[in-house]
Amino acid sequence: MSRPPRNPAPGQPPTLDEVARLAGVSRATASRAINGGNRVSPTAQAAVAAAVESLGYSPNPAARSLVTRRTDSVALVVPEPDERVFSDPFFVHMVRSVNRVLAARDLQLVLLLARPGEEERRVLRYLSNRHIDGAIVVSHHSGDRLAEHLAALGLPCAFVGRPWTGADTVPYVDTDNAAGAKLGTERLIDRGCRRIGTIAGPPDMAAGADRLDGWRAALHEAGIPDDAVEHGDFTEIGGAAAARTLLERVPDLDGLFVASDLMAAGALDVLAAAGRRIPDDIAVVGYDDLGVADRTSPPLTTVRQPIGEMAEQATRMLLDQIEDGGAPRAIRVIFPPKLVQRDSA
Image 1 (cartoon, rainbow, N blue to C red):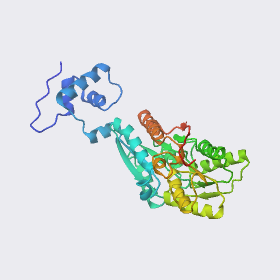
Image 2 (tube, helix red, strand yellow):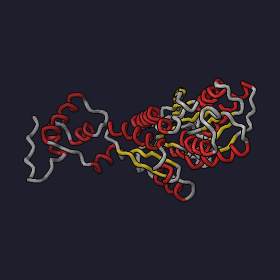
Image 3 (tube, rainbow, N blue to C red):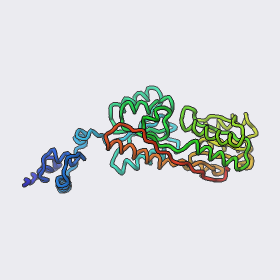
Image 4 (tube, one colour):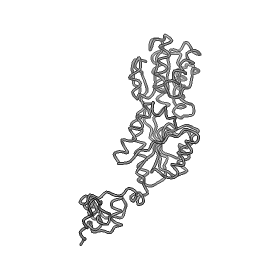
């Protein structure tokens, strides 16, 4: 028969020993039941749960961490400058979607900005010291080699977007960027455009390279030259600068595929300032559909990538690894792109 727990002193929270006594189990069994361990019978689990509720017991986070070796926190690693992270809707959607899944599990999100150099080395030290249970990595570049670093650490992780290197060692979620770019470019071809340029993404990012490949594939199939290329940095300012250069070099453009909606917004301003009517003189297609496309003038035809769904899927993949207690496994989930037609094309 279990002994009744003592009445705690005023202001003193109930202890694990009192939970164990009320439940009629050992202290070790009570600890395992509370902290999600195994080797606890359903009867003991139910008794401990009832004792916890009756006493109003709340586990000590530090003690729980020693038992489970968990921090109850997950890092979102973004190898980009601060100013881009806090101004680009891509990252806003990413943070919201990841946090939505974590909050449902009562887990904390930790944002780590890892620009190349000393910041990146500091972040890698933080990850290797296991201050978090796992990491989601987004907007990675060929030079950061984060997939290889995390695979070597054996840290649970998931990538949003295909890593440039190490894609065969870590799980990732992506959209079919080449197919999406091809879809957007084919829309321009179907409109009758025959001098089609592109503002491509950064060449050191898989998304930038894949979208450029998709644009080229569509033009090759249609027998259209693919020499009208300028690269941007996925920002509005970068898109405007690339559009000016491209328009000066190829003044007879009648179609333009842009590898992100932010860059397309900058390009639309440049085209309007040059007196080019859209879509009458030049049709424009973007990529992302994260809210920017609704607000441009004219509203932007774009290729939708489901960032929210991708981020949630990556988070669930990470949490599965953490629960299983295993190293990263090379799982990939690819979402199909979709063309969203508006007035610019």
